[in-house]
Length: 304
Image (cartoon, rainbow, N blue to C red; front, side, top):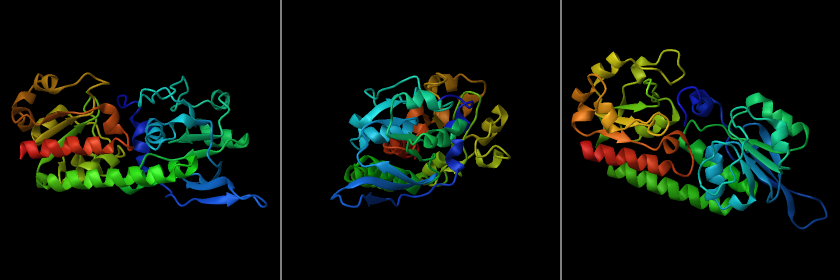
């Protein structure tokens, strides 16, 4: 995840209303098998060719999901920020400023997006390209539903179900083993300008599983869940835990935090409660979500 200039595009869209998965198959009359499936996405009921062979993903999270459910061989191109897994066919396609002509050049029979920027959904639908709009999840169940949608759309329903069940199990086990977080305060850092995420955001709800108190909540005015905190406010709040989701974008780490003016006296710094996260894992709502949950759980157990 980039600093806050991309925050709105990647994270704040989590507030967008989401339609759950409830697709079904449409069979052509006179044939024995279904030639299309209908997937209920945020842009309505989308008819997709059964087992599409040329999938384009303009969302890093959905790229991860497609490969995690075994649909990687069907993916012909992904956007420039889809950096995981390493073998994803990364291209110059932009998920932030999508260009319909550039996407069409890949001759897709399915395009997956997490936001309808530049009117990409309508532009592709006009030329008969099926598009699944699967917005950033606002809740865990929505993240699971989207995985189900992608499984249904690509012919990997069983694999998607297995992935979701595995994620649920790992997350539940981690939370159960780290339930002593109630009362601990934390600060989730999105960039080195002190932008953070409140409890009403997706990532804030993940922290909420552990009963942690988010110091950004009281500072949220009209920022849509992503306020910029002042240094003075942060020092006054003195959080027990600091989670850095800007280790890659902004080169932040525990040592750098300790060198910030006044920060060496913070509880999190003195008690070794500064946690270095993988920016991408911390900003996505897909298959690697259990990794974020584990990092939080480990930190809670360590501080307690």
